[in-house]
Image 1 (cartoon, one colour):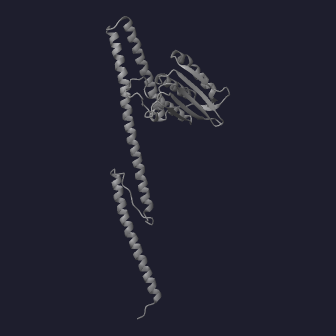
Image 2: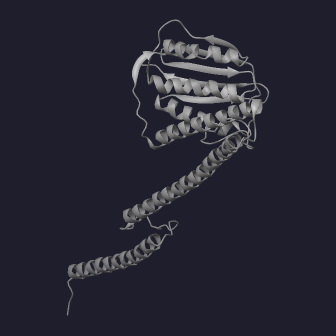
Image 3: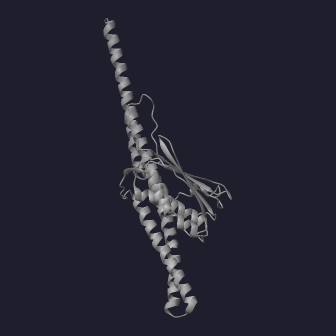
Length: 307
């Protein structure tokens, strides 16, 4: 009995193909079992689980997709935990910043109401109570503004205006305040027009918060405000000759509720500079601070020009 060589070759080829397909099918079945196991593991909360795959595996794209989903979920979970921790710290800080002056305010008013103090001492108590009430008012206003900025609910009304003219109007209102606080001042604002897309109220808040920060925290007696411009951007600098900011505090000063005075004995609520940063960002600008102990501090804002 003779065999046709061609049929034999075809039979062997078909057998090899069948063996190859069976091997592939078994490998795919094994991978599918592993995929099912990994998905169950991820579903139970183990976002560190990853799929290992070879270049020629038929399930390669599925494995890559599962790994990407797990990594993205892990990243989101980390961000969520960080956000939760940040808000817990925020609530703790807010509780302290409200409860302490409120208790003090109640104490002063109680002394007045119960007639424990009289005459000049009573007048002094009224004055202190007024300051405490004003502190709480400003704190709540800052807090609400920061919450609106952080949640994206702040409504801006941008229009193209002359940066230099708007700046002069804002700075002019500070002259008497600086003089009454025994501060020398130097203002350098160009006379030529410089069109910039801005929200006047937000820009006013930026300058007011920065100047208020100098008065409250710098411990200096001179402030320099300068604007320099080119065809691309405006540079605004505000410098003081005060005590400066240490290198350990400098990277954190724009963080919400951050205060360089960890004892919280100083005035301020740690929201002013964080609001400034958000408002500058809303104008597509950047802000940075440079300082050294006993050498003052310089805040630099860069704003793009409206072309």
